[in-house]
Image 1 (spheres, rainbow, N blue to C red):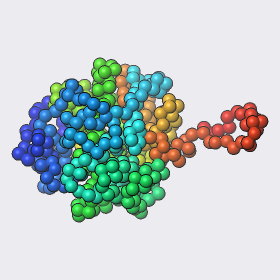
Image 2 (tube, rainbow, N blue to C red; image 1 turned 90 degrees about the horizontal axis):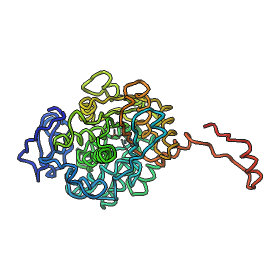
Image 3 (cartoon, rainbow, N blue to C red; image 1 turned 90 degrees about the vertical axis):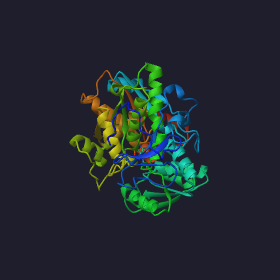
Image 4 (cartoon, helix red, strand yellow; image 1 turned 180 degrees about the vertical axis):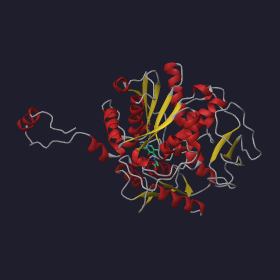
Length: 425
Ligand code: F0G
């Protein structure tokens, strides 16, 4: 079964509940959505997607935030802390410098826990409640753990998070900690943490809320719906391209699913679908490798390293959903160096937008693709910035100006000011 952009109506299987079901993207097997806990296909272990008999149009949406799009989601309401409805900033200086017709920044760092993960958790934790599970778990480079801890505690459920020891930014650990998650620091990288959590989930020890969970990606679809609605309103057309950082490729998969559903609803012509453009750090770029080589599968990288710890991932589990998304939309993928990421982080900060390193990868990637002529000067582009600056205060401080010590008197301060700006920025 291919994940293509098609306007054909889906065949509704017998196990659908209220027009909603789970379907394997590999073999097409279908399952009732909330009957049992299941993350992959019983028959072939392929990834599952939530499917619907009917697709809403833009006119059907009302309200604000993720639940504005309830008609496109598996439940009518969730465990909510007012997620979504994030700003889509104009950045005139950066737009000029990069040289595109329009550049807007969708800042997902403005969600309640400071990342896009909240959109997935408001749905995923609600489904967990529906399924009657009591312990929720995830592996995380940090943001998923912060969101799971917050939404789990809001929903009154126990939370367990597995983090790669020493590789999670301070703000994220602090969030998971204060929101009451049990935190296990694993002597291994994120991919090892996910292997373990998947095992725990299969053994029934906890409900898995990584992006392998198809319900979480439903919530993350709403990033795409918000961007498209805003562009239609402001420019009368959807963006030509959406550029985003890629780790597990969950967002890439989720955005592509939103586009496919809009095509099925008759709201979007296949040719008008924005080009999905993924950006990875050079030290953790297995998706980029697969796109460059035209490969059908992604090779797992065992050794990954980058300053953008949120996307320090060598085994993008949603690749089977995301690769067709990049290809079918005529998009691409590119890797950027840590230096390029930090430069982009500073450029965004210069427009008043504070993001963590992984988020800046989108802008760094766009800059590079524009310089290489792959992105045209006539394009209207939305870049996703996925997490807030305060998530990783150490990276921000390292990228920014150094504080200057001064004595506690005005003359001393004036003297220092007369010396000019001694920062090495
Ligand atoms: N940006 C940030 C800030 C992230 O935290 C993540 C993923 C990504 C981008 C990549 O998104 O996986 O959908 O391609 N963070 C996960 C976590 C892995 O555990 O917080 P993706």
